[in-house]
Length: 268
Image 1: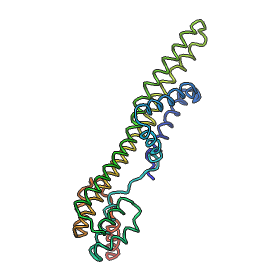
Image 2: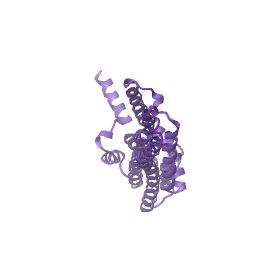
Image 3: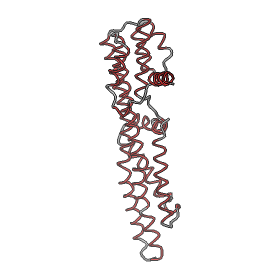
Image 4: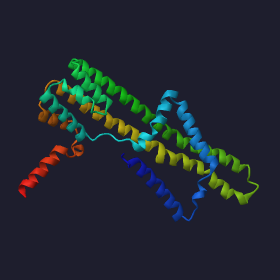
């Protein structure tokens, strides 16, 4: 689990709460049911109206992924592929069928089974690239849904404020209540802008980032298994895949850790 989104959202609301307390106001002053029902309810409603029902349902089902989702680091993917290349080099491609039983990722599992079954390299690449593209479209659809909510929410907040101010103008004969009524009217705008920037846009951005990382992971796997099938030397395969990864994502491989440890023991 990568807690970035959860931590960020909690810190954002914490900063808001701190500001309210520092200003000497009460947090309850912004927790007004009417504006919150309008902003959240109408935002979700127009978000659903702007897309198809299956895409909206898919978006809601993807919500936990924004907080709990995690993609295998590139270096770990490379080490996994290099390990499989070593098995294939030592025991032959048919051994990959048995190795596929130890793999949890359905994408890699199917790739190994197809290699063991003797599927042509070009056909294998086409099949894997098609599946990767389909997964990417699915992830982008969920991200787009929440980004659309972030676009609608501020405008709906303004609508709520206009409705409330219209009600305020009907009560000009009672000046004592105007201050509280006007303040309450702007709560809808607050929740519209707040929900967009504290919730919907971060969630949409997070799902989009996870989709990009997953797409990069599948690209590494596609290049790796196709090269593996062609009999690429494991070390060269690892270097080739590492060249596809940005330097700040290189990390350190488990094999490198073992080598460093061995060198340190020899030096001692």
